[in-house]
Image 1 (cartoon, rainbow, N blue to C red):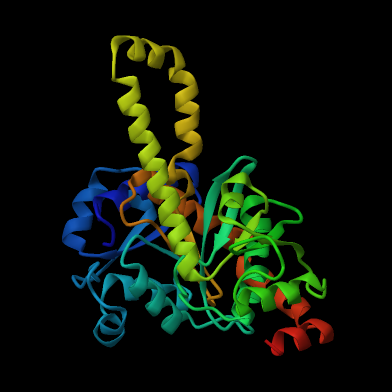
Image 2: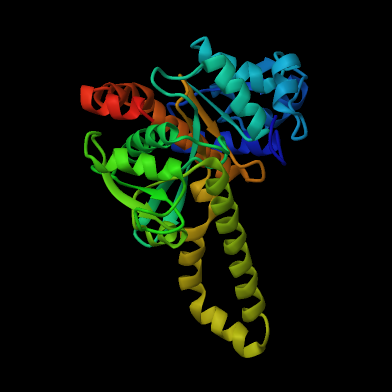
Length: 337
């Protein structure tokens, strides 16, 4: 029931996802009186869906603490709990991000060896796609948190992006080793030693994100969220500029017709719906957050991310990587942070 255009957008997204992934079934949590008529419009989807009724909904204005106290019968809580109970392999929601994170952390708990969860998402780059985390779950991060984010992000890039040996960088105000706060410098020092099984590039700056300098960009949630929202805003700004420019005169309109096929390729490459679906890494269960303002195509892509993570045993691979990290040399350095 979460999202600006829910539940219609969610059902339509499930329909698209079902076409792409015919082996996937859905548990829908929400008001049955609203969901049943929508499912009747999609006869191909209906057999793959089961509804678990609740009329309680977490709104965008609800505080996470309030949801933890009173939201156990909400559609969000029940969906997360289905993963905890083994009734579902993953949860996908376009609802309140803070509430979803709080509920997921409370119900699913953390993976052994991980202190905090991180939100990981995709960025289009000159070379394809990159992963960035954290995108807003943790405003303040210690060096230990950043090292753990690097491990989780590296595994995420290997599984979802199919990169055999992803390169990892830490977002900083400069590439020089002496720049940045204590947390980023200490995390860099651990990653540079080579004790962890990670291809560490070093520090990267904001312009390196779109350039694709590294496959995984590690950041605290404060900087990561600002970078994400800035990139989204800049993409919309350029789209507006292009639209205004191509409609400014008859000659410009003719130029648009000539360049239309190329512009369509650019639009597809930078379409935020293509990169929708941020994973809550570090939880003992698969939870994917869809952008609240997305449409059915974007929500279907978020479902696709969840299916990829389940199919490739993401959390089990994270556990194995953490066991590798906990070698004598590496664990001593991380424990000292």
